[in-house]
Image (tube, rainbow, N blue to C red):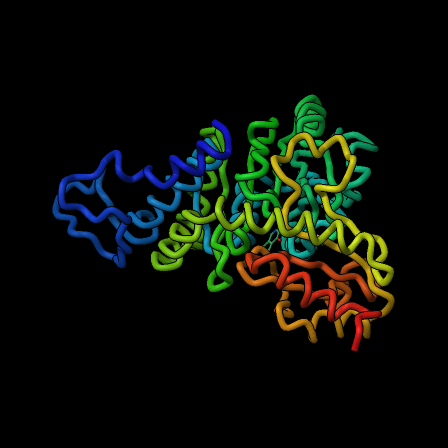
Length: 365
Ligand SMILES: *Cc1c(COP(=O)(O)O)cnc(C)c1O
């Protein structure tokens, strides 16, 4: 299915099974207990295992991924579930040096203590060095924050030949833009805190896989570890997903235009926008995304841009309706002090660009 078909049919998923008089939108099911006399098999039993609102969210996420999906209370909840459910003592995993830093901290502070060895490699050179001896290879493309790309299909082939599992963090693209499972990945993980929910008011994540054994194991991890999403957050995410394609189309179109203009701006260096890359991995992406990174002269200049532009929300995270930006060096990412990651929101383009141009060095006072 094309992204357009997926987005259109997403809005009518629930209609198929609807009884006359039922609400068109899935209700929020707030329940820990269910009425359960006698044999408990085959019906919802307890709130850590079953919830109709998660089920509705998972149906929507699964539709977009074209694979069974499990919802988690954050992106890290989803990543933890995939890693802890798949790894055991003695395993080696490969993780990007330049991807989301919390995944590396998880490996360093928790997986290591359980006997899992973590090896780091730059996304831009992910293929070099091969994948022999890795139980699991974790990939992020475009990576956050460096926006480096990697060919997922090529990596999947080599990882599988070496007997490993390929897990792809697809947060920066969303399933409407890139579907790693179609490219050969075994598991996709994502933070739905970002564009899928899109309104910067909750955290959510998901895992999707077409491997039934892995899916069952990850589901058991959720049930036993107890990291489950709240029904109301699941419901809000479902609402957010309904406008994902609409929001993305504005965000991506604006990001393309803004990336082109920033690239020509004399105060801007090292501009990176995946949509302007000539990397072969661009073929796996339906669009160039809404994230742009670039470097301004210094920390002070970058902070001035981020904090004085009235249409930029200074904040960490990305993918919301509000354009936002931050200096990643403040978190210790290996980037220049003036490195800015910009997440383009849904503000009308020309108004947004005028405000940005005013906040860049060299604007008329
Ligand atoms: C934000 C993010 C995560 C973590 O998601 P949370 O919802 O904050 O737990 C994981 N991977 C990437 C690439 C992210 O940007």
